[in-house]
Amino acid sequence: MFDALEHGKLLKLFRKKAKMTQEDIAEELNITQSCVSKYESGRKVLDLSTFLKWINITNSEMPAAAMLFGMDTVNAVTQLMPMMPMFIGGLFRWIL
Image 1 (cartoon, rainbow, N blue to C red):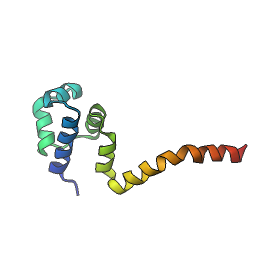
Image 2: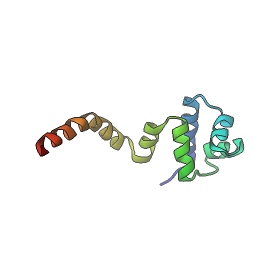
Image 3: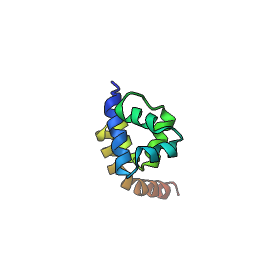
Image 4: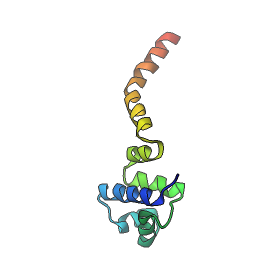
């Protein structure tokens, strides 16, 4: 179930970790400070495009993935990523 208030708190956390004010992120997103406030308080829900811009601007890709997919999925992907070059290299050696 979607909880706008909880997601709003996370958006605020992402912004604060990026050391940005509501005015700063509003300017980057080309929206008003009032709109940012509504997103962060859960009174308004972000569209997907704005959400993706928000996480990109605040450099919050990993925390956002954890929010969307749950920590178990993110932890599994994070642990598997270092093994991908070995797998791909082994696959190429097998083909050749």
